[in-house]
Length: 189
Image (cartoon, rainbow, N blue to C red; front, side):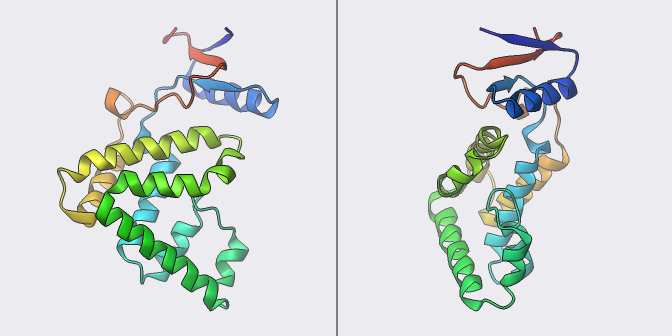
């Protein structure tokens, strides 16, 4: 077992990125709110696009996220390539139906499964997938208390606005319990 002790969470992130660039798998036990992550904002963008599937601006915003992974050229091409636009709109309608019938966790799991190979190829792909799935679980719980799709989007926006790293329920999960270098702050150790 190997651990790296650091002074703060910012140092932990830097050490984890350096180890990843060197090909050394590592996990950082951080103290960051799940709702303050890029993944929360990306998931919200996707839900907004699914809530209003006719809004091409929201569709493009969702397609531009790391979760869905379209680059600027592919998004710009949607203006001239009607088939691609219709294909993406059709996928969004299918995802919206999945969200309505089976809940947000089923939707997030399906999207993550479809994008897993590409996401896991990213330097922080495992961390991102873990965050998306944790958000899906929390949205599923919120779905029992909120009304409809719009209520779930509002709930997520409120959680993002009130992100609190001191709230244990909002903390990031470790992305893996496989054999990895553990990066821990002196305080946490």
